[in-house]
Image (cartoon, rainbow over all chains, first blue to last red):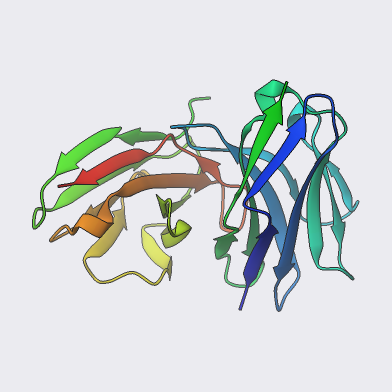
Length: 113
Length: 112
């Protein structure tokens, strides 16, 4: 069975500081991995995805994530936080077998001025 | 290209009533999935439809049902509403199964 664990339900950083949001997964088959962002009262917006190939994936708004198979991790980073990055971030795993997508519990990012 | 649209955006119902939510996927997308989002349970998968057939189902009671039409539009229905059904219901479409999902803005359902 698949599962997704996001470490830290809340993360607070200062504007200009590094953003690191952690995601670990378990899957019996090679998964597809995603990061989504959700702003208040809106749906989810895709930040980036990993399917195959290069393990460092670049997304929108300066975010990137690295797939580390040995660590079963897919952590999201951004070198310099901006106030507009304050939102909730979700890591998701899609099984390449049954195509079922499981989401992590989410991490709310706060950015301090 | 227009995004995923969901109607209505907001709904208020009372216990025991039923409700139907609608989702229009991105043009050309054939897979539609539904999710329930609540503060306590997070994002939970309801079901996935592809080519008018339910392909996956989450762990929800039979009061939750859905369907997909030949134009890929989808509806979900919740019968005999309970207070705990209050949630944001999100629809996502993808070109095919397992492909990147694009989400609509959601329908906020409040059950009184």
